[in-house]
Length: 136
Image (cartoon, rainbow, N blue to C red; front, side):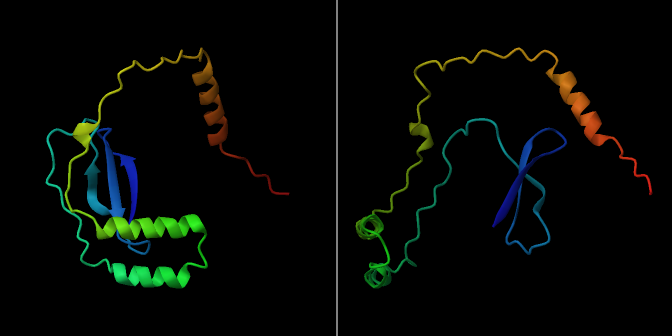
C-alpha cells in the first residue's frame, strides 16, 4: 500500500492511499482528514489473528537457515517463537497510559531573522524568471 499526505483547501492535513504502485487512482477522492487533537475515548480494538501463523513451519525454516544468520538474529527468532507460543491475545488501549512530560521543555530562543523573507523572495523571483534563449 502506498500513501501520501497533503493539505486541502481548508488547510487540513489529509492522507491518500492506493493499493499498489500500478494503481492509477489515489483513494479516497477527498482524502482522509488527519486530526491535530488528542483522540478522546477508546476505539474498538481488534485482537490479533494468529491463526495463519504456522510456528512449526517457522521453526523448521529457522533450523534450515540458522547457518546463514548471525547469533543475534538466530536468538531474536528463537525469542520471537517462544513469545508467540506463550502469547495471550489480550488487547489494551495504550494511549491513555502515556503521560504528559512533567518538566517544562527548554525554550529555544528565536533567531533574529530580519531580512530573511526578503532574501528568500528575491531568490524565488530569480529562480522563477524566464530564461532567454538566443539562437546562435
